[in-house]
Image 1 (cartoon, rainbow, N blue to C red):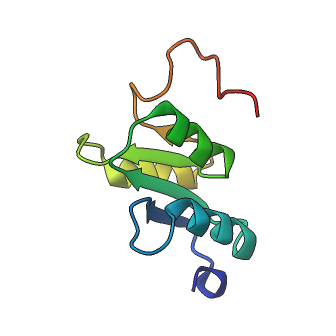
Image 2 (image 1 turned 180 degrees about the horizontal axis):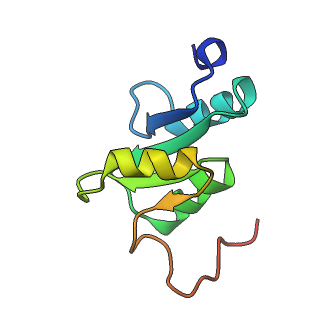
Image 3 (image 1 turned 90 degrees about the vertical axis):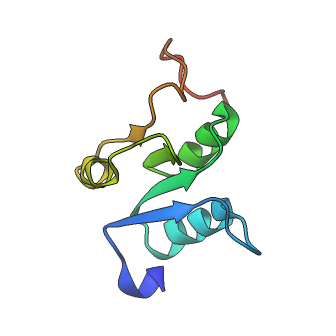
Length: 98
């Protein structure tokens, strides 16, 4: 469906039934490379956040953190990356080397 509709921004829950949200992210990047994906998840572990970003997500929102979803969508649509504060290290060291 994403390949047919080619949305500008897609919000994607990692907790899907029967399939990994990261697999859906990978398929989205393949079928609609211009679609910017924002992950919504209950997980705030750094390794999961970095993996989602490494696989092409442009945003990562931890559910129940009081995030303004409209603002996050606008920011990602405009080409920036949105990640909840407190999820990534403040040192700016970036993701672990792959």
